[in-house]
Amino acid sequence: MSKFAGRAPTILVVEDSDDTRDVIRLELERWGYRVVEATDGREALEAVAHVCPDLILMDLNLPEVDGLTAAQAIRKYDEHCAGVPILAITAYDTFGIEEAAREAGCDAYIRKPLDMPQLEKTVSGFLYG
Image 1: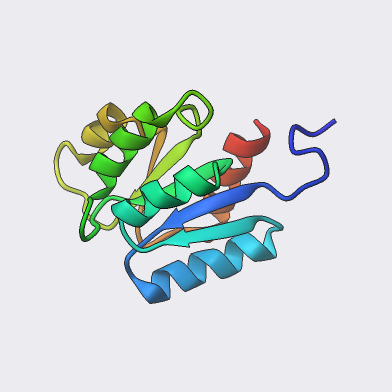
Image 2 (image 1 turned 90 degrees about the horizontal axis):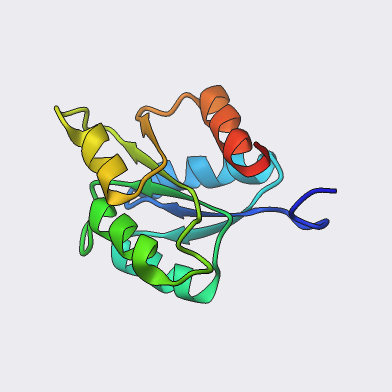
């Protein structure tokens, strides 16, 4: 029996670009997931407080509260949501950014532009293992 008990897994997409967020949301919905959206790290923390998602796609370069800071805060949030997988997504491939994402509590690192078949495989792997 699936750990989601007949419901679609919920994925929080944290992305400040409207166009990128829309593309990700449309693909995730097409793949059968429920999507909650946030445009910055502050909104991500508010979303996690209201709906503990099954997975988080976190852009790292965000206004207000950046993705690394938001990931760290989510890891400290509470026992129920602290273990939610966080996939860092970023267009910035600077030295040390992948390590910084992992140190902040991200479980994986995905570079933009997103390869949708690879994203689907990664998301499915984290949700259904």
